Figure 1 (cartoon, rainbow, N blue to C red):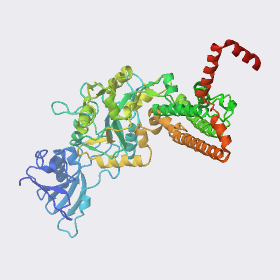
Figure 2: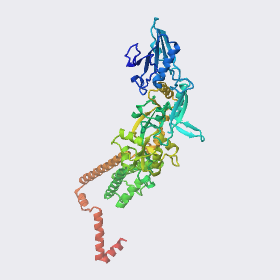
Figure 3: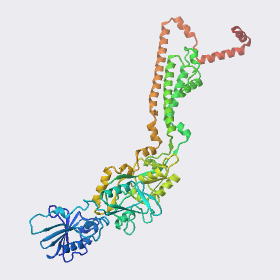
Amino acid sequence: MALTARRAADGRWPPPGACILLRTEAQPGAAVGGGGPCLRPERPPPRLLVLLLLAPQGAAATQRGHASNFLAGLHHHVAARTTVVTFAGWQASAWSWQPFGPGRRCGRGSGQPPQLVASWSLGSAGRLQVPRLFPDHTAGGLRGCALVAATYNIPPYVSVTSLDANTTELRGTEVQLVELAAQSLDARLETQLVSTAWDEGPPWGEPQPGGRWSGVVGRLLDGSADVAFGGLRFSQRRARITDATAPHARDALVWFVPRPRREPGWKTVVVVLPCSVWSSVAGSYLLASLSLWLLAWRRRWRMRDLSTFRSPCGSLLSALLVLLGFSVPRKPTNLVMRLVFLAWVLYSYQVNSIYQSGLISSLVHPGFEGVVSTEEELAQSGLSLATLPAVALVYSRVVGTAGPPVSINCSSLRACVERMVARADVAVLADRAYPQHLARTRYRDQRRRPLFTPLHTETVSYDVAVQLERGSPLLGALSAAVLRVVQAALVRPSELVAGEEPLAQQEAGPAALRSQLVVLSPQHLQGAAALLLAGCVAAAAALAAELLLARLLRGARGDGVGRRRRRARPNTHLTSLHGVARQGIALVADPGQAKARGAGLA
């Protein structure tokens, strides 16, 4: 009978989702590795049921042998999901291969005899127990089999430490995660370290010429490893040949830029307030000085109140002393000038408080020049953009022309970081975890601060998971074990992603910290300016009221008094200059009379 394959319909029999193959005794061990959709190792079906028709006189040993020969011709991933039902007369037996057991690789125990799942007589009454045809091989764990894992050095996920010439020790958060998952499945973990020298391609696995893959993915495909880990992210090309467990961490591609230079000391003192604030303070200072000088020329005020503010230099100096927080030689006692002076004192006090608060914050957290915090600022900074060729391909496919283009391809991520630290002329696109680990442990200054910082925005974010070969029978059990370890907080996800808040605040730059720590900011000057304006308006109103009151009083007095006052020359700066000029002319015209007048006055 020819080999046939079909997908079973839903229902109790045939089993839902199972693929049924019908074979005869003529060629039970024929090559079946490439025929039909049920036998493809890259996409194995959930369940495979094989009906094998034998001679009526076939004994149990003969049935086991035929089932073993058929399973040996399948791919080990397909064989782990296959149940062979042999029919010998009225006797039927179900056989399944146990892929896990002590002393062999997990899922690759070639040559192991199949185990009897069920046996029944077709002539007896009763119903076939379908669930027993497909036993759960991982229900009792992996039974001590060897779980081979391939990885590479990528801190903080995997850190390789050489104990001596022949011994290396693997540490890291993902190493601990896989060890706990294997321990919960009763498996022995054996690790293989893939070289990071890039002799045969990237260690995380990329397609190479000839259809092969490099790194840990290549170890999965050639059968030398069962699982692979090391900060592996989701990839569409990798998803065609591998399966992933439940994600246990989250990482992202971000831009790393050199740490900005510290501002000079003079700029730290001057650039406490913005230029617009300094301009408003200078304008308010000139306005207050001019107002005090003009009001000081009022005649009816006593001379001792006007001596400080009668000259422009005196008004400017007095207003500057108040602005700097010093006292003036003489304060005005007139109502109008006191209103303007009091408003200027309050305004100067608030400006002093804001400047002192900003200066103390600048001294505690000094500023930096050329701070880059967004991709827009990165595009305008003039820095060259560098990354790995594989990362550049992902970046161009995701971002396209929307982001800044990559101009430098590095041979390794360490080379990119070393150039950024040495020259400070490039920005590096990389996974967040590894460069931040380097910033914590290697590239720091004398004050233990990192020499480069990441941008606040993420270019591409992705999940991190353990990878297995496509169709591996370990997928379900290992994914559940990883999920249990993460949910039990034995390995916290925050430990896997090196982006904790304290370091982010430390790398955010002093501008963000200064905006959080400054108690008084230039926005408080709005109230001070309003107060100064209110003082000027009140002074103008008081001056208008005083002029109106003086006019009313002059109208209430007699005309004679009014005439005498009208004949009196007002004592203004123009009349004073006129009097001095007249005295000078008289002295030149008649020196003797002027001398006698001076002696009489004496």
